[in-house]
Amino acid sequence: EEKKECRPALKDDPEYAKYFKMLKMKMPLGAVKQAMVRDGKDPAILDRNPDEPLEEEKKECRPALKDDPEYAKYFKMLKMRIPPAAVKQAMVRDGKDPSILDRNPDDPLKQVEEEKKEC
Image 1 (cartoon, helix red, strand yellow):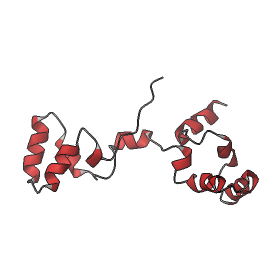
Image 2 (cartoon, rainbow, N blue to C red; image 1 turned 180 degrees about the vertical axis):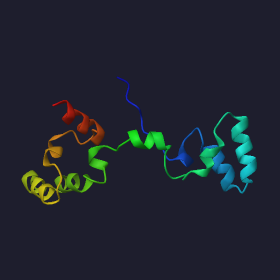
Image 3 (cartoon, rainbow, N blue to C red; image 1 turned 30 degrees about the vertical axis):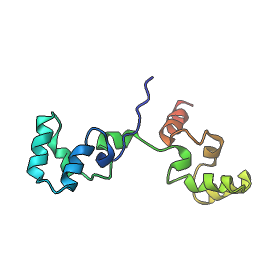
Image 4 (tube, one colour; image 1 turned 120 degrees about the vertical axis):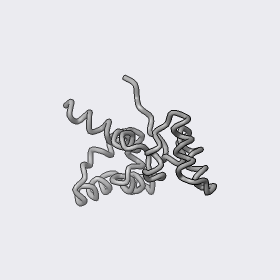
């Protein structure tokens, strides 16, 4: 099974960065879109938020559990040497699944959710 890597924000994506740089250098939008067409790229990309990855990438891409906004604070609590039982209690209080802490903190949440479905 091939793992799909998360793509960076459009403005930092190697495939599109030069076009966003052209815009930053005050080149006319029409000229930049024409350059994209010349290079075989979709010019509609320039109408999207440059700080986010492509939509289809964003849906499949989740950060590691330790970096996921939903769970990062609990992994930070562990890092601060708060006892795991206390952190799990905080998760229960917040309505989160405490078994997440038993997982590899580098696994993305999507992978954890898929493993739960298989059980």
